Length: 309
Image (tube, rainbow, N blue to C red; front, side, top):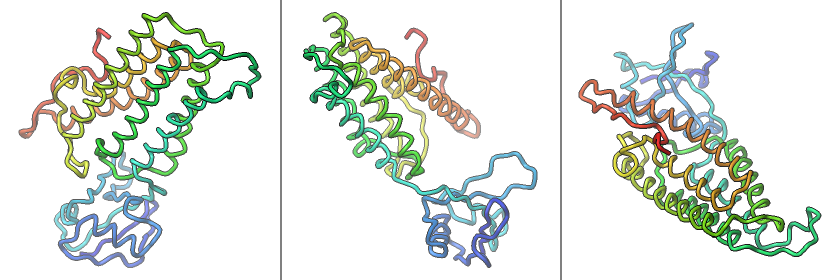
């Protein structure tokens, strides 16, 4: 089979095209492109089918596990694909590790070291119990996230753009330092003991629930992270993205116990981001499981938060 690889501007990426066996897969094509270009390793490539001029439809993205014949449209001898450079890529596990490592290391610095002298505070610092429990809660959360990254999560995409490392680290590290600064400040005023206990107890329950949600999601995917199934069980019987729901509520528990403006701003921003992700996932699952052609129908569920919370 001859495969012509063009850029989105119509220029041939590889002059004369590539000759591949009739049984070749999209992954084989990606490897062949890599051998000829060196720079564009497979995870950096996005291959699509060409669209008619003026079409506003979204192009069909080639699945690396499928045969090239599946996209040949009746002509098994020739195929034209459109190449897009996704830029430098990193593994998702690498991305998550670095974005979570920052908050995990930064927060204890504000608790253990006299950093407030650099901000002009010279008075004596008294550490309240809520500040100590907040440290344990915070470090447990981000240590849990790192462990889940390497031992629980299965990713639908192998890699992420390298630029996301800098963006995500800026987000997590900045908020981590901002919250740590105020919760551990010598002038911090703690909430009453009952409110602290209720906040941390509720937050810890949500952290455990969040971990269980991730276990359920892991069991939905094959070992290579491919495929979609309807999430079921536990809170997934109520909301599509129970993992995001428990994530938001665990930060609500933290903020009830610590009560800082920085903490609540972080929770609101995170909730807005996760709600956007949840809406996209909800639409995708409803489209995949529409009850047509023998497919199951996606049940009626709230997207992220049930109405009574």
